[in-house]
Length: 441
Image 1: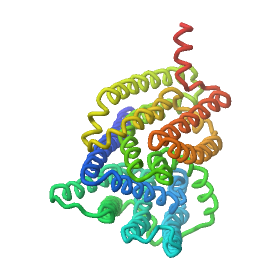
Image 2 (image 1 turned 45 degrees about the vertical axis):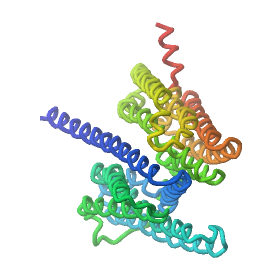
Image 3 (image 1 turned 90 degrees about the vertical axis):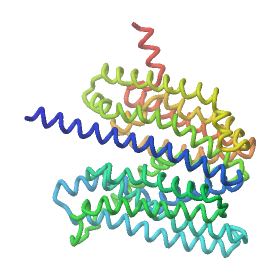
Image 4 (image 1 turned 135 degrees about the vertical axis):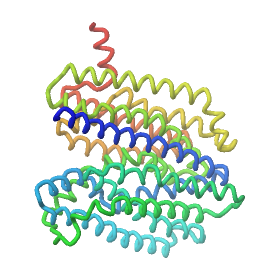
């Protein structure tokens, strides 16, 4: 019976994992689909402005939540299993209170900035700023509750609305505009995003309506709030670079580039994301086995897992590079003849997934071996460097220079993580180890 139960649990976990990957892949396809339609409907300048606003919505949502939700997997699980519903309820409520308070603050700052003339005098820009301030907390709430739900075992209910419903609704709304023949202004497109974010939040709330019932009517306790904030701050740089890499680069480029150039870069990042996801999917697939092998001190097993992951990544990287180099120009022209200018940035941005393939899952090794402090400092400093390098590259050589700055800064980050993993954990995660072991046979 135990074996049957274990097999059933393993099967359920595998099914959830495959469902999440499937939702993410389909979501990426839908994202590329509505990006294609948007590019065809708008001018490169309008497209660049839309992508810049979208990036700032996502980044502002991270600030509004202060990344408190990253503690869900630690604190919610601990409080639920140890019979501390008051602290669990307090943790959940504090997340909402933080978003609400910082939303008011961001609205006040935006109003003062507008009054001071920081956004110019155009009504369109006023609409962009207003929609950004309203949309960001909606995105923050869905991400926060998605993370809470995952910690409580409701991974699909919490995550699928974000990964699949949101891009599906945006795709549907943009497609309807395309079919209608309308050519709305910039603010209307952002309102479509806001509508999609709202639908996503409602669907998620419907799916999770009973998940947080344990917190209803329970006196809330906030005595460990300082720990909650500290955990959020420690993991924030990782969240920014891991889940919002594209938005960081687009926002940084938007500081120095004309909107059309930002649009070329954003499109290149959207296509690069498919190869980037393939690299991360390999890491996700081996992370449970790698964690167990590291904890058990199984050196040969660790080496075998890293070798297999490296081979898969290099094969995928080569296939993706060949396809993009051979057919990327023709594919980009589907978005409009102007977007062939995205090809050079796209080829350069392939350095990002290539870095993952070459230097390996050093972040996983450091996390498992208790070196979260290294991840924090490296990710934090790398974020600052990436913003600066992207902006500097943009000043020097437009979208191509911005892509080079972002890609090289990411590669340096991966190199540093690999070096620290080797010196502190004694694990060589890079492809160098594969060649060394092959030559030693």
